[in-house]
Image 1 (cartoon, rainbow, N blue to C red):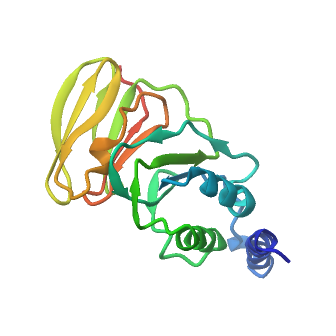
Image 2: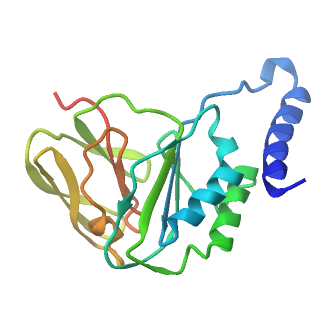
Length: 212
């Protein structure tokens, strides 16, 4: 059994065994998860190969590879995982999905510094049309704003203020109280479902919702 077969069979067998051994009244139903995975790396081809061989199964019936973006400069790589809009720590989980992500992080040495890295992003759902952004601190929406109205303002992150700008229908972070400023280097977002995350400040901005 190769690694892909191990992750796949283990993932489904554990879930099925749990459901079979749980009394019917409290047996959990299979629920659709919205999975959003971003990998920052200077070796995007290696990431795509690993994901296709070992991670694809965990996205359900279909997995979308979204448009890639390049950050100019030197930045630490890594993995960002959202499930149903909640940021998850893949290093602190027992599922085989998380185990596969940890294996990818270790084998591809993602946590080192990367030069001009690429944001490789995958999702298992197509977001609805939207013309607004929602700003989350941790898992709570702290502000909403329409994309069709130019604006500059600040939101308070865990380490301090995060300065943002909306211009020509695009959202960007212009400054933040964080060390590496990956969020500032991130290209502006405009497409529904796109997001920018400042991990040290626990701020996530996603194109979502109605701006009217």
